[in-house]
Length: 191
Image (cartoon, rainbow, N blue to C red; front, side, top):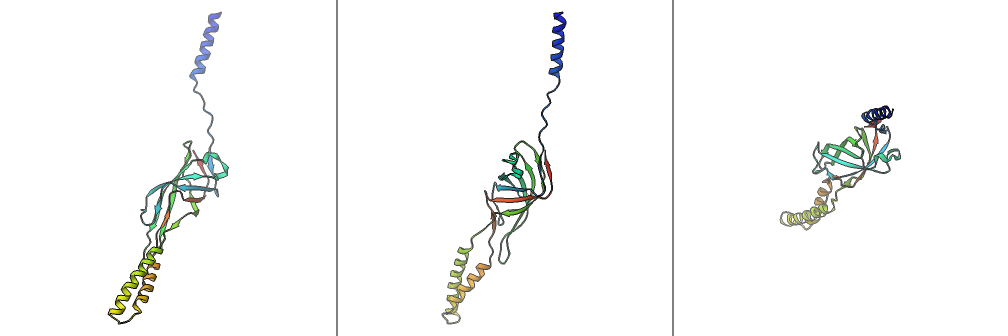
């Protein structure tokens, strides 16, 4: 009888060991429509050097969507969609789109996010205005005395140089570490 009991116990153990372990169902994380997502830039994008199609990444920071810690350390991957470098009378533009969100557990999704706020930085143009005013004053002074036999050329040149430089727009940057706040435009399940 002990043999039958031993054989039965071995058979039961073999069946139990041959059945694959069932992993608990992983929780599906969702990014609901209207949810705000805050992220910081992992590198700098500048309207003077960025290219359309250029890839970049961001790191999701708190407060997390619906206070869900699954978003801690998540990354956003995106690309530049439009760039206009600054120029004389031409305002700079830097536009981008987010292609994918990836959670630390490997879950991913393709959200539609629109920018609500960003820490864009305008380059400083003060030095350029001062240098152009000085150059204008020197050229104006020289022209005023040499051509028009007048002392007013320096003042006129300084004003002209300053006006020219102040009309020259400067590039904008989304610097590494800058925060951008997005809003989800549709609900996405991250799997």
